[in-house]
Image (cartoon, rainbow, N blue to C red):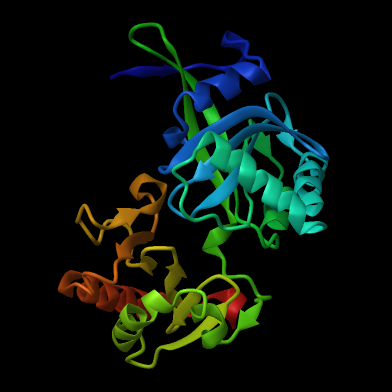
Length: 290
């Protein structure tokens, strides 16, 4: 389908128009996002779009800015949202209740809010500031286009994804602390580790995951209620298999699959692990991890 890119002068959008356009199909921003509600009131303000990340079992706040740069004031607003929940764990429990009421089939719930911002432009200093936020933040700009049927189309473009940089400050825990809540996954995780921890690889546990590093982090294992979500940095386009889901609809070096106790560790997953080690070894040492 042919589309024509429009200039800002050719179209007049309200912020709500942009919100409605993306809420009709949140997969434009990211696969696995599910709409929970619009204009959801929390104690410190109103969230434009409340969504749920079904891939990572986390709540997602989505905010939209119609005109001008994404400024420090907009960033402070988002940080204020996060601070309000960080100051009282009972507030996160209320948010979980809201999500489960509107989406009863939620199994796991990770109490860590993700932020997505849809903006027209973003200042470089704000981009840099986002990389030191511990919560996962993505910022999208967008183009306005018109298709051959004269329909207006919004085309998002990823500007910032702070998950691509390993944070320097980590909340480390012991392996036993992280595993004790998931005893049914310990056997399959032990088998998984035998394939991950070879060729000079070492691992460490953060508050929510195991990470495996060679020259740089190439694998992350997250525990879910029924399976382990294994994320691998294999390189964009290097794995073509429906069981391996790339982030950002394929435009990423990272992807993931689910490892169930009943199936163990399939041979093809072992092959993907080796591919991730090789890709990690070729990439050199990340500046933030020196």
